Image 1 (cartoon, protein in one colour):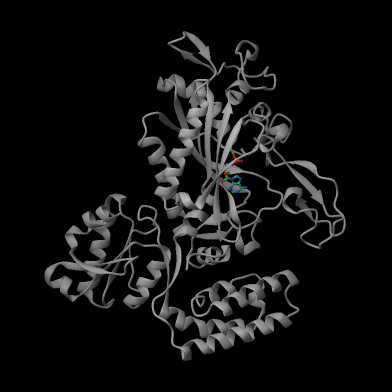
Image 2 (cartoon, protein in one colour):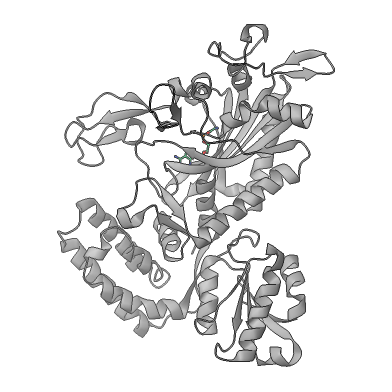
Length: 530
Ligand code: GAP
């Protein structure tokens, strides 16, 4: 079964070390997460794939890594100081604060409709640069990476001698003081963006906009998010951001959330380069910009054909790394029943689940909304048995579940049949998998097997091309399951035959088929199949 709820992904990410709440031992920080050992590998592989596709496999792109802190004037002339706002409302009854367009006129905390009128709340984080906090030291943490590209346009153009059309790509952190961060990695306060600003001759922007839409959808397909799971939303004019003439939002069908934006592809006209330029009145700008008396540069391009300076138009594909990771995990996630559990193994779990739900229904230790969510989820699991058996662990990871005493008993009953009859698999594309190869010795206390397994690990990992781990902490079947759950495409086992003829078994994650391969050919085999 593919992932049907966001909770399944949250539970996997916590359990296997993809993502942790930030500073958890101090109670965490809302809307901020840390990438664990497997998460950082997956995230870096996604970023590497994006960089490879958009920079190395094209000949019209340059890379950039601009600073997070920028002169405050950047944000004045970009329009963010004035317009980067969300509508904030207060609940007069319980004093909580909400984003007006997320709550349909009713406080999600207490249900009251006694709300203040929405007022603009600027989402940029503020800080001070240097030891004295005054007007001169005031700075923002950037809310998007894009502006670092625009203010460097002239530097990149001069140093690279590029001709239009060309683009500049950047991956980096962005910060937004979201009023209500929520849904795990989906809406957070600190996140990474992968952004391209593609500069084109005015008049060619519509064709380039369509071309980028096509190219970006191809990339999503290449990382395992198929075209059929993305809707292209042509944002209506009244909902466009202040800089945009037209935007296509790529909407992915997230479990629990439904279709939500994973990437925006905006046609930004000459708004950005025009806004950051001096002598604007001489540039014949198409966009309406604020008057800029502070910039020291004219951000134009000299067109050798017409012998005129023009302000290029911009197409901007902009994707969030966290939302991308979530979409990739959701697509890859699969709970497979390897064989049907017999009814005498299932009945004790069904009974324990029923008792747990009864106890949860009576419990006064947990808030009503958490209790309702637990009951709804638990009943869905009970109705879907045996296929839903692995979801018991997700149920027990839900907020409030740890308050129910019978949870321990339920976990105890479910664990053994889940291990025996199911496997959770991440069908990640091999180039994205946090671990590409896992190597096991058939026996962990046999010197020859261990030495050969460790030497295979070292040789595959050499040069950093194939992320390989060694593991001998359990029986082979259990080790396979553990690697399936984190998406490792290949598992290599060193057995007694290996010591005689130098061959090993290599098991395919998706088909579970095994082949014997000479250990010396493993690297080539893995590269070929990846
Ligand atoms: N430079 C254009 C720009 O920043 P955006 O639509 O505000 O456009 C681009 O953001 C992408 O960044 C979104 O499609 C989304 O993937 C990601 N993103 C934006 N806000 C986010 C948040 N609070 N948490 C996680 N990702 C976010």
